[in-house]
Length: 364
Image (cartoon, rainbow, N blue to C red):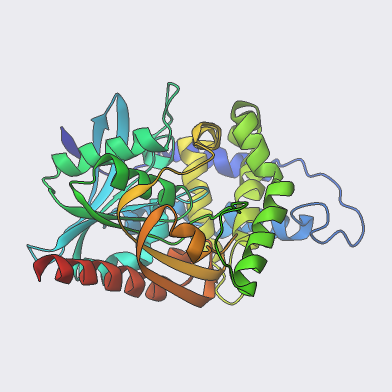
């Protein structure tokens, strides 16, 4: 059963957030620390004060409620999603999947341009946001992909495309693998390509530089990733109890993974962080790092890739082609890991080009 959903956070939860922020116990910081020890104290205090005194959740809640929200239960798990229908009745449907530390909010600025040509289904990953916490083991990328296939079936879509970045990229390619008869293609804006020794593939100097960057990341695993992959419950206690802890945990990612020329506004970032805080999904969202496979399975449907200059890593096409049927490849000199929020016009146009080209190919 699919039911309409309206966001209505209890006022007591908002009052509790304000109270906790006012009683923050701050650590000290060494002189001239900047980013050498982690998120700078001065900047975090500025964000916390903004959150406590100027940020208005009710204003953003009202704007979000202008979208058509729904929930349904799949495989014993509540699933929240936004469903925006195009004015074109025969439009192709797209399922858009966010990652961590994002949410369905990532896609707010691409809804209008994409809905001109596509029906849009934008779910919240189980364990994230309004889908609520997961309650059992096993909600990995493939299980989520199967849930998305069931969701699209319930909505009556027999053929559709999939798009995503971060975890949304892995879920989208997994969806192409579990439902190849329904998925016409997959577009991603994040596609890790690890070095393959003795693969016999000739790589350019720029490709080798990209692999060096991947090697450095693999050798120096980011602390957040290690903690969420190994002990998500442990870090979840701190993040669920301290709003400033949750703030620093996510704001650091937005600061380090975005193009400095296209920063995400504090208001948008605080709305995303508020979503994690108000739904108490810090621990359950972190579990996806624990449960996600360390490698990707081949995807049998056509794939389009958008590579953004300031993403965590940049894909290497010759290596991507070993696993995927690459039909579309775009390189952008702007934008980072949160492309849908940073450069929505570039991402939306690339998604449109890929899927409309696929649609024309199918009709010829």
